[in-house]
Image 1 (cartoon, rainbow over the protein chains, first blue to last red):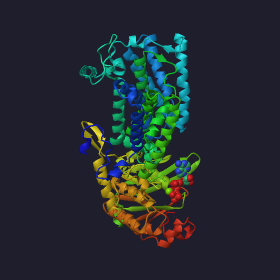
Image 2: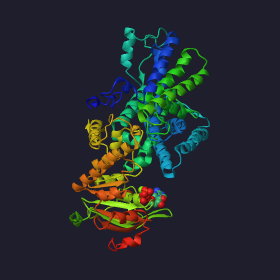
Image 3: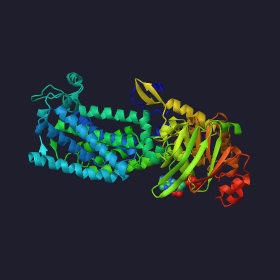
Image 4: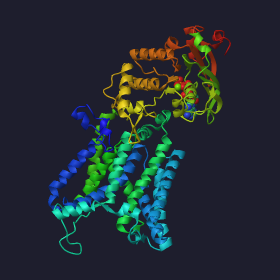
Length: 373
Length: 264
Ligand SMILES: Nc1ncnc2c1ncn2[C@@H]1O[C@H](COP(=O)(O)OP(=O)(O)OP(=O)(O)O)[C@@H](O)[C@H]1O
Ligand SMILES: [Mg+2]
């Protein structure tokens, strides 16, 4: 147990005295192989394009981090045996609520964010309650919320402000402590120093001449890393993590063994809503505006990342680290094809191929681990 | 053997009724279980045996009736309550999750924790250790504690479930057809285990369709039929043939009434 002394996740606590081949057979293997393949591919085809200089790395890191934030929630929920198709609408809705509270109603931004998070958690809990009370598939229940939340996201700004985009959030968030926790940057000193000693490029001209091209790590990336580590530790190293696996593996058996399955599922719906709202808040702070079409199709992107990462669609099996790798693959491919100058429509082709390849590999690995037939 | 039954019962079920909508699964069943006895529950398919033990282990709340645990009226809010009280169960449809590892299954709902920096973490090292030890005691050699239950055979799974219950059943151990998928050696092992824990003063409730298994370890035999008790017989008051007939569905009940001491 000494390797778990600090909360930094060891790759997997269960691999100790096993041969190297057994050590490889893990849920994340598909994600690891996919990540290596994707980086290999782009290092060969797009090395000169700027994809791997400071700006380029920041570019695909930010996109990957966005996917990671929603993938962590979707991953834990999927392992607990449920889906949330309302993630994308939740992103739009949360962003819009922050805008309405802070710009239209003039609340301080921190208050707008806190109240929005509270609303999101309540909606997540409502999703969960409906699912466990009615026994309906979460697929259907959250599909309803996909429409309901999107409807409100369009209706509210149209009635209140007569437009579907509300701007002025950056100005409102000026100097706000909680706004900075989502829209700010960290390690700016380190990046300036790296610019000064020439590790990363600096602007040659303009008002920002002499400043590094990348002047810090956006809080979005910090949130992604924190959520991935948190999700991984909760899932693999706590009692609650065991309940998540059990709830999704076989809810009846878990109940008979005393696992509070309903509580686990409701909490996971709330966590998914929380992740969606983190995404929304970061996005709103970055863009300075909220739009009624934000977050469209994000639920599928989250689910795809999770599945590439080795989770089983029917629940009970999966890995947060795998989902994070799935999100990384997703982000790198999306931005990499742009750097490589490939027609953007081919992104879908590429994504489909990766999805299929990863799922086939994952299924093969999973059968080896779990003895499924 | 009979002297044991002179103690106060550890668990006393009084007029338990359980309705599932319009289905009356239990229509007033009373059973007392004493520390150190093996109480066999017998009866036809659909007689209500599993439903009955589920009310005992906190899975179902009885529609009517009372449960006394160690003399106190008890109302379990869930299986965890019962487990915390020292009642462990092997369910007929095993409460095992094939996708999860043996040690995760073993401690499911009862995870050991170890505090690190004030945060309670799942103590995997302890869980793995105990799982391996308990499985070895039952005569099953695991590849490792991280082996998924799905890779085990049906009998091995049953053995995991039984050793889990033995590990957690501090006061009452409920076994719902635990030997139905076991080989000869493992069956003997389970019967020996029942005998062992009974001698430690633990109450065992044993459901089986096999009369030889029942007679091998049972102290008392309660027969259920269509949600009602046909009566309880002491060991020695009933011949294997009579028990067999009763378990076959009560066809020969008339002949048995005498030997059951008029409790029918
Ligand atoms: N959850 C439920 N909902 C509705 N009816 C149920 C439920 N559980 C059990 N029953 C009914 O209650 C009756 C008793 O079932 P139970 O499982 O207790 O039988 P059993 O004695 O354990 O049989 P077996 O020997 O086949 O295991 C059956 O008629 C069954 O259909
Ligand atoms: Mg049964």
